[in-house]
Length: 316
Length: 49
Ligand code: SF4
Ligand code: SF4
Image (cartoon, rainbow over all chains, first blue to last red; front, side, top):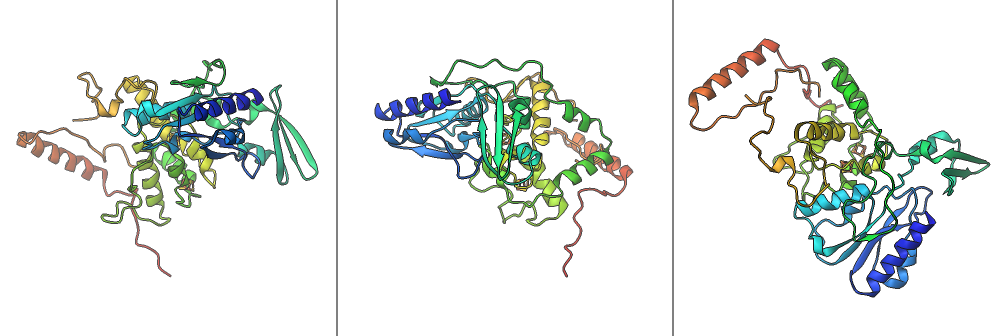
């Protein structure tokens, strides 16, 4: 990770010095363990604030929406696919962005780690031999890094950036033997009543804070449907139907666009696993249209292109 | 999502296809009536203390 950090700083400094970019968006160390913060660097001498480790799970494409200046951005595989999606959706000009591509070694899950120790964590360090050392008042515990990964990273098949101007390292091997949809198939197989109970339980704790929406680079509408009041598409309270309407619609708005970056789940203060919704749509897009979001700037997404052989068995 | 299969229908009808529109409307009405009243995704009146 140290090499990644050094290389990112070096690239950012050079891009700013050469005037290739007006700013670089990356991560700096957060004030709490496992909470790196997005940061914007405008002067070469500030590039040393940038860091890289397993806590850079926030999707920085979210900060690029509508950028008109020249921006350098540190991007993992998933972030790069969201940058591609931004380009396809005319939210960003390819010429305005310099992608500092990070071959991703997967992010660690702050919740899994917090749940596995007793007491408040004061320091989390990753070692070069694949361990995560967690320290707090009166305890120290070591985990295998592979056991602490975010759910989406554990099943990720696109760790390397799909577009990259400034590579931070050589590509990492991609995972090939992962089953991305085991849980989705289980939900598909449920009876209607079971599925309703599953979702009731899943959303019971949602406080409608919209952190999941705000963390997502896809959610860039000036006024989100949940915030509109004329007409008011969905009630604003804790009614279970309103909560479900919000979640289902949010997921549908991400259909064919979601890259499973996990920023939504990471942001949720109550730990709701809403990626099952977007992954169901991801699975459908893959099976029906052979589509994976954000893989190429030259391909139109299935929801905005018509093909005579599009499947239409559900339409009468 | 909790809605039973058969409650939600999709169709593609051109503005020139009046007979198809009438037929589909009838079919949908019958299919949904056969399912009985909807029990899911219903918002009850707000409970005010
Ligand atoms: S819906 Fe969640 S996983 Fe998908 S792109 Fe948005 S933040 Fe990432
Ligand atoms: S972040 Fe979590 S609690 Fe907040 S609206 Fe999203 S699912 Fe609900």
